[in-house]
Image (cartoon, rainbow, N blue to C red; front, side, top):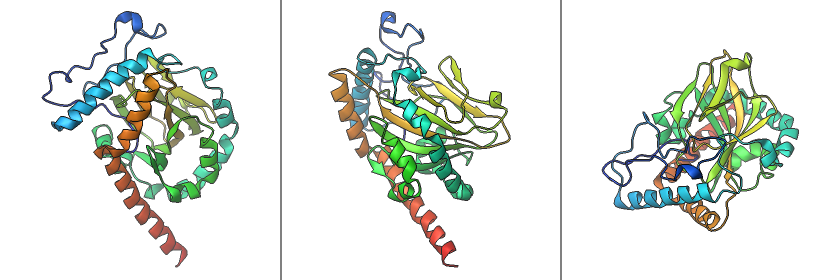
Length: 293
């Protein structure tokens, strides 16, 4: 898996089947009384994982609770951009990102569905209605894609703790059902690049808050809360989709760093890397063939 977006709920382990937030109510964010839930109802479960995987997931659950109590920026579903002043620099250069996106979209039909890269995404999306163009993800860089979007890559370097960067392409009529990210040690940024009208027909819900994208505007949210997104317009919506490390106090920051670096070796990430590499070979081979005609 290149980027997170799904709940992971193992079978057969009494300690791992309940994901309600075990924090006392006093630890909940006062802006949002609904605690983060470690799972999503209605999302397909994994088959019984190995003993090592179950142990790793128990560690993840422990660190997630620590992350909540050691956050430097609180735990709201959607953040005020003032919390992250660097978002202004990203927004200021959005036309350069949009220009590179337009070149990518010349071959939009050849871009992969997200589920084609990350198999677990198939629990919420099984068609080409959600496409992606990945620059990097959890230790993996697509140098060929970066070469197509050098300005986008340069601008993304302004984001502290960058782990993932990609274009997220939502086709008309696409709806992602409620789901949550697998780990709360990262936060997510969307930068609106193509936002069709009518804007009231497309949005993302994070917990109880609804955000409607706007071209050139960034939003930072915590995908560890249940969220869903939809595009009911007759046109394509595209955002720059970025994950970055959540600012945490010691010792959560150290454990978070370790988990994010260990994630590179999990089968989900490795499989996503392999799928991305295989897609790149086909995509750029076809481009070369077209040039040589």
